[in-house]
Length: 153
Image (tube, rainbow, N blue to C red; front, side, top):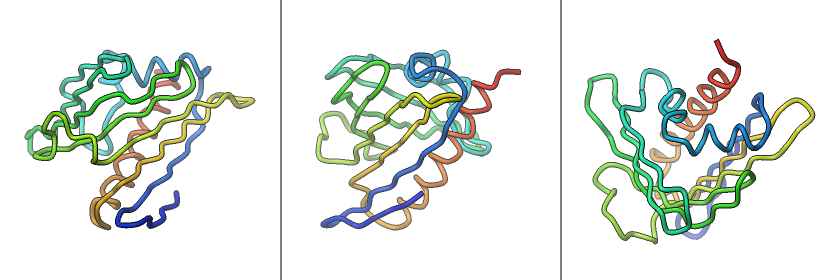
């Protein structure tokens, strides 16, 4: 994992190779019923997930926190190139108002490898170090959950 500063924001890059073809991993990342099975770091779980997978389409993910509260992650798809790439805006909690294009961005690439698919998450336009650290923890945990889900029971 590496981060770097740009003009007034931080960027985070997280990689993980998981079992499955790019097509299978792309579906696990973009089909709500599959996302509900693996999303969330640590004790955070996905309580609800709605994905309208098309450029201009939206998504909403409800993170159920350990205290049973819900924190919403929402955004809009900017690029959808199955099964290799998706890019979307990212808004969390109170920042989750519709129509904000200037906030955080997430680009996820799915690259075939000899024994699976490398998932690369690039999260940019992060406002401050505390948010960066929260995203670093979150993405590492999500990729752990994705790997465990794709490994099967």
